[in-house]
Length: 318
Image (cartoon, rainbow, N blue to C red; front, side, top):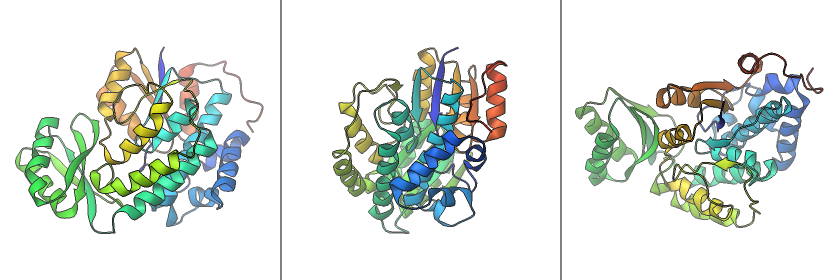
């Protein structure tokens, strides 16, 4: 069995995420407490209780990374490991923490700043995103190109076969959706997002993030981590800053990433973080592989059952 860890991206958040595992595993609770200390506010409260802040990008991003790293801490207590890792957009920071390039504290601090920069890069109402379903990649790209006369519109996320997100100015995105439907798209879904992610409109955020990345020590990778920008392993730690900067304004090549991992022999994908969006993508991209997620006690139990009886219960488990 060759395993890859996949780390959840923005949009998977929900109130209550991480709460169950933190109540049973001190290792998970410790990640949250450290994150609250690092951020200077109560991240547990934002993740565990019903509130409006969780869906604001500047809070969403550190909340998801904190939750993902808390879940990872539990899995590592059980002895789970992976040959390689990747994260969808925001999740790439969690993957880099797993891969040793960033500490948990550095990853959480960076995504907190990243969220703030992205939130402020484009005024509210100027940009938007939509998902195009059931249309070939070439035809989506044609629709985007044809709609570009109306303004900025670009492919943002190549999620899985038949599911591509586009991003840009409102009118241009709407026109691209219209053209995509004319070309045979099964459905287009406007996304309720606070910014047009992964397009050139976020260049101001990319510039600010690059300056922030220059202050962080990037350590040598101890695991293979795939880049969203290239869908290939990151060659060395020096490339991390540039790739994370490019990622803000570049499409996420997620489908290509899973295909590349499967080509390297990965037959088991474990999604770590809130939700199971990436699990669904993996099943569509590499249907011959096993895909599981871990986000709470129930999904953890399913993973333990899959892995087989006899795994030791960590001392810290209640």
